[in-house]
Length: 445
Image (cartoon, rainbow, N blue to C red; front, side):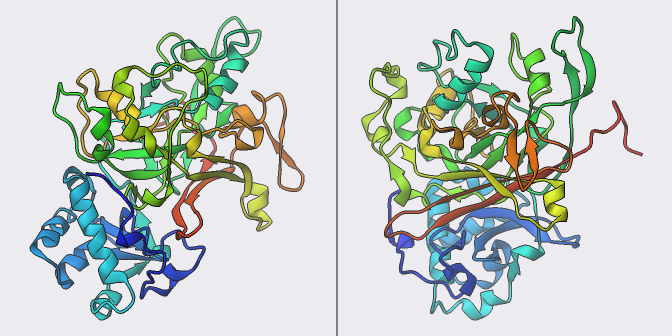
């Protein structure tokens, strides 16, 4: 189906949930993202919910209390599990119908207000889980600015490899270590080769980095052995989130030849708890184009209709709060502000290429966009770029600097869309704090 602007995007819509009407809310009634939650401190099962303002509407309670058509009741029946995979598998028609129903029952004057007011849960009182059971995680490399900047550090004579402009580069990540925001992690340990050394040593990474990325959750899958044409590729997308692909750069530089990242990437990936549907982002589409002089993609990666609105204007921010800043009560400080429209490859191209060999995608599979850096230094999505590979310390707070992350550092990713005539759509945040390394091969007690 084609997701276009419709009545749910009306900027004049207001909700009976007052906090959703605030101009700076991430979650107005025009957004309605999906996630999985339970009350903090409870033993209840995780369940599907929708963000509205600073509250969560429990979809299980909506099924029990709300009045809806048989079609919507059937879709809500797919939301009873502690993950969104069943809803994802129904495709965009089902999630779009549910989103339209949610828009109706949450808007001002809706007769359902009295019943549903009782089952709203404050987001501040909720514990979140990874919103889907992720079978596979693929991380792409779609910012040509990031690829070039990193290439200049490792291959100054040939910073951008010749295949980059022809093929969406990616590697297969580790889905078992994808965690939702606020799950802190320990500094990883691995082999690293010190400058001038003849043999590697095992120890905690000294060059821990973040990567500012967009995550893409697959909705409807494809049949094994059948590729997805670019014309229909976006119909296989459930929605987007924020993603931080934490990276140990010293471990990475030692291990990545010839097969790519391994221990330098598989220890932690942080995502935001809310999945923003492509439908909610419809007002913020833009034409996709390549720089003049770049080669045209092969036919399976190009389509005029897909290119007409293939880009998304999503502002992407990364901020850092050191342990000293936290002790002083200082908020995280912005390090960089980029945008998803800097992607050299579109979401549709990622899907078309991923499946052209017959690879099967399944509901809940996750893509990472790769570090979303722009052309300016202030738009760099990693410390590797901001500090020129650790050569130029970056100022943080009133008196600190960073080349790479230190223990106690908290990294916060945020994203939002805005534009004249439309309500601001936010993504929430993806945040985690770096804890000290554990002893090597330590078993839990």
